[in-house]
Length: 406
Ligand SMILES: [Zn+2]
Image (tube, rainbow, N blue to C red; front, side):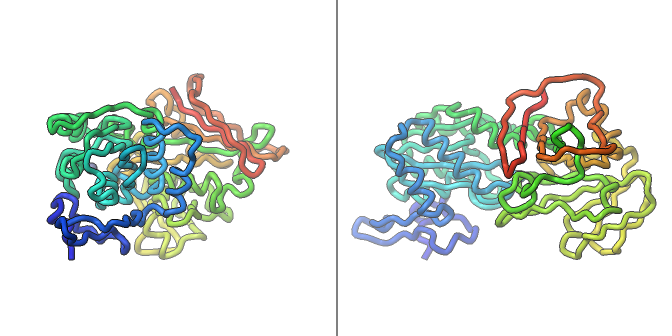
């Protein structure tokens, strides 16, 4: 019996709830949650225990906001075009409710967290990594869920750049007498949703350039050991991005379509740039993968094997700008430009990339290989530039460096 709709109509979603969602019982005091609260099923008990069981870490606003980000990341690759959002409800120094936005069209993080907290949300503090929405979309506004739950204070990581949200959520909460603080762990929250923010501000997808180098600086056709396997950086990147752009030059060789091997990964749209060819043979193409593949060409071409779902799009002008316009039109928030050894097709497109600010991030992998021969150098762009906010890590003897273009 869905008595939660009586308890607070805004918290009653028509979305099918996970099978062990908290239920409400009729007690002597009317409707109330069962005394022994169950954890929200999206958040395994083991994870929750690990986070709040660390007694030596100081539990301040930053601590709870970092937990929000940690929760939000559970939905990596699943929420686009929506942002990833996490929320925790804290009362008397203890986390009493947690939630995150699992997928576009499903309830938002605040709704799950408030449901998880039950009547413990009253007079509690809600932490949320992104400003709560204040509009009716596919789900009711989260501001109403928080107001209805009678939280006392809301602490927000960052204000939403979406013009239909921007500051209206904060205003609505303050107008209801709730104390609101913004900008806690803001940089962390911005990085979490860098693609969403970029898309909102510019209307274009967030673009990352990726390539692998040998130890002596040659561009490689291959990735480093383990990179494509589950847990490898490339597999994780593919899970994170909405689309991946590759060159048709790769396909005469044995080349499989870029595929994420992460558990539950939604595969990115594979966008193949075909230039100077009349036909394209894709040996790895299957009926299943054909539905998430687009060939962008300058003229009509044939694609083998002939499968119904393969989409061939002829662009009037082949440029990175027109490719990204196409991606934006398809609703992609993030695109990975995957450069391999045979990069002539993409290289021409990348010459004016910096002038037009079309690429935001670079991920470079250095592999423990010393190359002989004539492998290509990366030689594009008309000016020099610096990268900022560099991060470096080592994975399976490969060094992965990422940075942002100013
Ligand atoms: Zn919302």
